[in-house]
Amino acid sequence: MITLYVTLHTLGVRLRQRHHDRTTDERGLTTVEIALWAAAFVVLAGIVYLAFQTFIQGKLSQLG
Image (cartoon, rainbow, N blue to C red; front, top):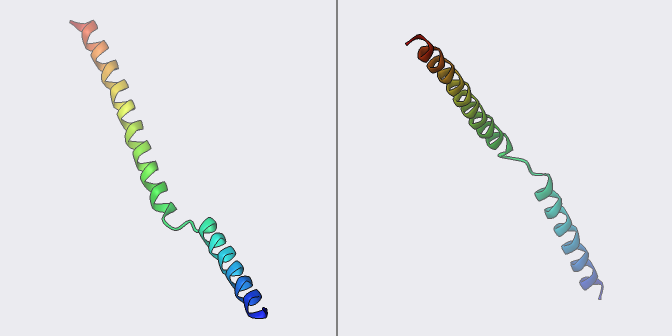
């Protein structure tokens, strides 16, 4: 009976530790974060380019 108790206790401790490791593991988050920031900057650059292009087209249409 003590063997069963020790086995179940060890299993419980290992499962709890495995769950804790999975919830606190953030490896790879930095790569995802960098990729998202890069995508955000590309979108921002596109918006600035379109705004500048629209402004220039508006000024050119006033000239001629």
